[in-house]
Image (cartoon, rainbow, N blue to C red):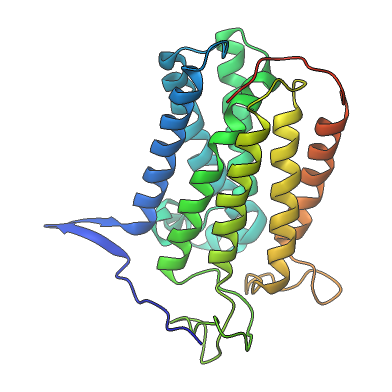
Length: 265
């Protein structure tokens, strides 16, 4: 068993101001996405200028924050937030949904694409490889907060989390950081380095994320207010991954063999 590294969730305190690791992880994710986007825009034939990346990332940030919070409220704990509306704004305590954040980003990208006169799926293809680093940092934030831990296990790398009872548990946040962050980024960034049909890069992102998240949910403790939805193992995260898997597979295969669209990497 490994010892859980108890890290103060407050990274820096300046008088009454507190900067929490969870919020800083979101900042790191936004900065990494912005930096990668400007790097991609600098590639010959990308069709993007750095200032356009700045505008697009600004729209996407609002989509992530608003969509992620609203998604968590609607999908995971609506009754609590109806009874405690002030808690809606306390995002530094966690409570963000990837699927809600994804819907928020897609809506923000649609607004940006419409405003900039760009094809929606082409913009999503450009954005998709920029997302995994943010997922990586977000899961590290979950780990530091000691939340979203895994199910009990006897594996040698199990950890006892502060709020997880006395049982050693899967560090599922680290599994997701590795799969949704490192592996997903490597695959989608490499795939986007060559000319692909429009929508294929987005499809690979959606397909792989759905597979990775669905798999990790088997060793992740379900949200206590929801528990398992069916069969003694089906979680809300898995249910939300099913349409993402289907759409991702369709986008990846619909124009198989075509070489439309510029390389995005």
